[in-house]
Image 1: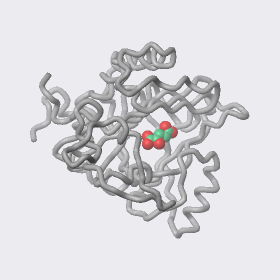
Image 2 (image 1 turned 90 degrees about the vertical axis):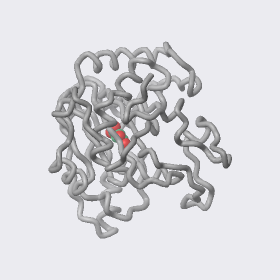
Image 3 (image 1 turned 30 degrees about the horizontal axis):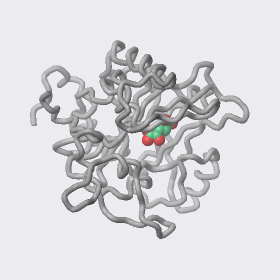
Image 4 (image 1 turned 135 degrees about the vertical axis):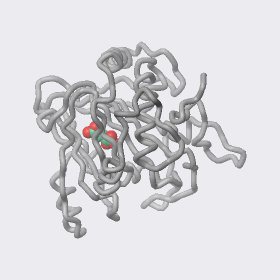
Amino acid sequence: MEPHPEHAHLLPGGEDIARYREDGYWISPVILSDEVLDAAERGMARFYAGDVDHDTAGVPDPPPPEGLRKHDYASLRVDELARLVTAPVIARTAALLSGAATIRLWHDQLLYKPADSPGAPANVGWHTDRQYWRSCTSDAMLTAWIGFHDVDEDGGAVRFMAGSHRWEVSGLDFYSQDLDALQAHLAAQGHRLDIRPARMRRGQVSFHHCRTVHGSGPNRGTAPRRSIAVHLQPGDNRWRARTGPDGRPVRHGNDDLVRAAEDGAPDYADPLICPRLWPPVDR
Ligand SMILES: O=C(O)CCC(=O)C(=O)O
């Protein structure tokens, strides 16, 4: 498949792909324009104000008064966010890194991390995305993380554990505030932790493998950290029956939104909820 001529020079080359496969994450050059990110900022503000364009995925919960805000499916509701999430350069990059011929949206997650203040829990605990996607057959799913502005360690940047996509892990939790305890837990499982913050300029995008351990600490800056995580699936990903650690069948939010496939299972290729992003669909 030939790269789209407009952004061929911004796509990962052989060494970048090798780095992604070695480390479990990769940070792109600046691939997104100020214009699309300015629009996304406006879209985020509209979303929190309840000013949505579509109610495809139901009415969003109001944002909590303090702490981390995390809202799934915002791009299905607000057009400016859809424009960002469906930018072909993102899905094309994901296809090259993962080796998938086609990429579909899995879902997105709008994230707002306020400046650190007592009693407002805003850390993201060490976790893998795969642990929340057990109903998926694909082990090559990945996430594109997009800050709407420059983000560094002080601003609560995402941190990755390099090489952790090759580990077997358990006991991790997105919602845990105690990053040190989870690190000790991983070290006790025999893992050597190589923690790397993703310092990013506006327009850069980080891509991480679904098995890579990641999380983020407090935002010690003065402004809220504003971002969206775009979760992506190879085109051959399908639903599978699975039980979780508690012995109960696992479910994902997508299972309540997508249409049923011929066998009655959730159809993760539903073009409304999980549109194909690469190659782009002619509209
Ligand atoms: O925004 C963060 O700090 C973490 C985001 C995350 O867990 C993800 O992108 O998968």
